[in-house]
Length: 238
Image 1 (tube, rainbow, N blue to C red):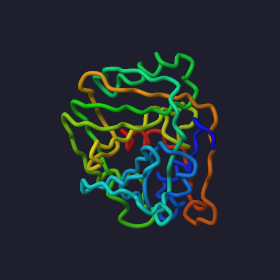
Image 2: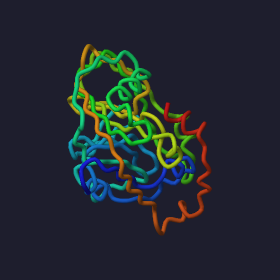
Image 3: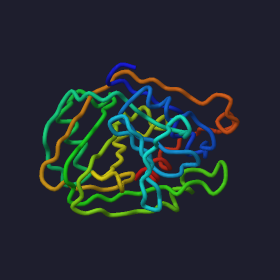
Image 4: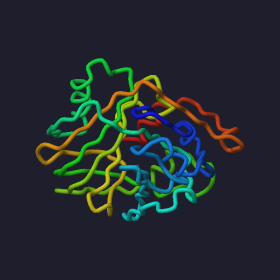
């Protein structure tokens, strides 16, 4: 796949319905991109794809490098071959300040996809990690209700993510969806809050091509209601 095109496997609405027993090998996802995020079988942990390497950030605080991606599946992932159109440095005092920065960098980008990467030192960063389903088809709201949260301070690392336009809510997560991993690749998770320690490196690309693959021969997916649940998605994604 060409640079700066979005590839997505399955739907966020499917995760909301608990469709997470089956999936596609992570190696297939990595064939389409070197930058991204997602989850793992049974929603067990948070995925980050950084420089073509996939890591699983678990609720017990550990991070596992996925050395054999052909043997591990994902029920949902979004990736791209990242090549930033804009590279700059910025100080960000709150996650809520990020949309203004992105809009400044891409004033015509409201209805496009943006891929985001930030490298540097973060004064504080609050993350959550999901511990996984207790039984098949357990929905994401219930899984997120048992999530583990951690606050890291004065930590060096990388934020990876996407800003998706409003019209894809349910297909993906509208707005900014970000994951973090530290420089030592030993801790991280789905970002709830963050603040930079001074300026960090920021790279952003604008994307206009979106490739979607949905599961086949998957009974859970075939039976899912896939109802648009904006409030539920916003609740679990923070």
